[in-house]
Image 1 (cartoon, helix red, strand yellow):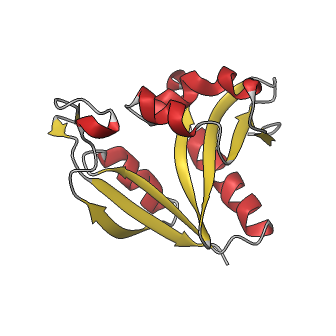
Image 2 (cartoon, rainbow, N blue to C red):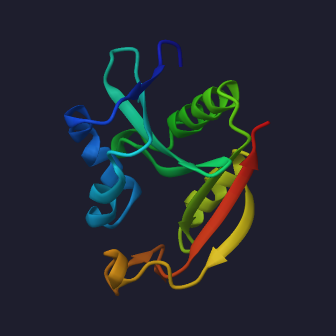
Image 3 (tube, one colour):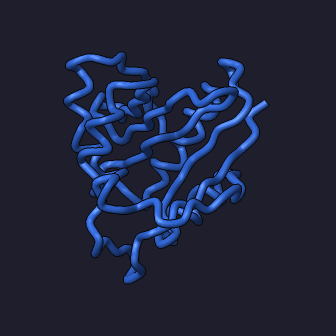
Length: 158
């Protein structure tokens, strides 16, 4: 869609406006509050300037982690996430980032497909990642599947 724009919001009080979007990407509000002021927060705006989605990128050694990726609920399944992710990855490539990693729940069938369609490859499974100690409820489910394990994927950018 024409007129969409990607911008970075610096850490600080301005990021509070994006907490509702960031909460869509993570089922633990405690986790979100623990990381949302770190890294680069990419905001993907529509032609009207209204935020369509966000990607929070954290430096992790010689790669970056896409810590949170979310699109407004009412706008999902319209290609916005695909365009937003492509724009963020293009910016990261232009900045010389060599690799990006992303994690999602093993129960997140749609998310697993989304990232693989975007060129990410399976890398690791971290068993029992989603637990009470990290702020995730014991009865958390996605697609009728218990949410327990984190699936890590990566993509070479350079």
